[in-house]
Image (cartoon, rainbow, N blue to C red; front, side):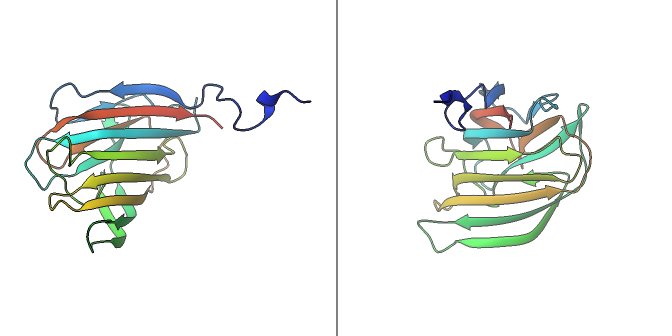
Length: 186
């Protein structure tokens, strides 16, 4: 019988690997990870856990790519599907664009750590020499108390091999939560 470690799914072999973590011990205007992406890994996973904001309402968390310690500029294209299990507000948004950043959700959320925290898993391919594709799933509770599950697909048409990423709120500060970045090998 062959060695069972040759079979896919049997053994982890260090995949994924935790590369960076910020537990956000106090309110901050941005969480930036520079030099975290390199050619060691083919793709990256980012988890956002219990992210809260300091402003009372109307706030979203954005992200932007970075390279060489600087923000990367350009137009981000996205498509989102928001599914609300407790309201009639399920929608799909297509052909939306933002300049120099992208959003984690298209709905604002509040400051309650127990009710309005954002949780997300993002999949990024920042080292591609082609367009930068990213997709993520998120869950949040809006200021209106509507629950939302989000599915996002985003594109930045830039051939730069990115080496960093930054997260920041549309206003105020990120009040709490945790961000982890994992590298994934094929």
